Image 1: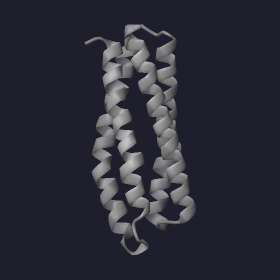
Image 2 (image 1 turned 135 degrees about the vertical axis):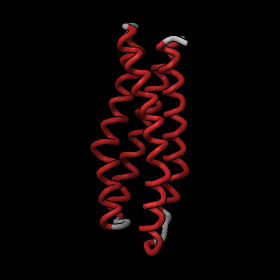
Image 3 (image 1 turned 120 degrees about the vertical axis):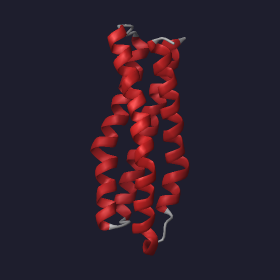
Image 4 (image 1 turned 90 degrees about the vertical axis):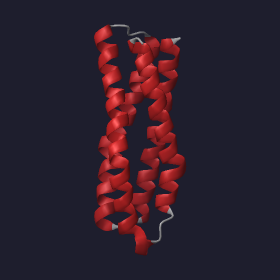
Length: 137
């Protein structure tokens, strides 16, 4: 396996993970009754955190390999833009919103913010996968 295929593999795993969060996990979380919110949100966070660490770690490791390998074509930069979008959105919007949801409960404006951030992460992960696919081709 070379660096571009490692990136393609990591990007594929990440896009699948992100699609699952967007299409399955977050809709279920948002539908949680307020009386069950604290328990359900805590369980979601506990379960998803190790997966986030593995998936984002794999993407980061692939990027280290790509950048040290030096094969940086236009498609790779498109993929990089997607990864930066996803990472920045996670760090600056989704994670802080989860923290607030844990403290303040399922406030509608926080749930909307989380869903918007999540859709942007799915776009970023899809962009990364598309760029990685073209780069590996």
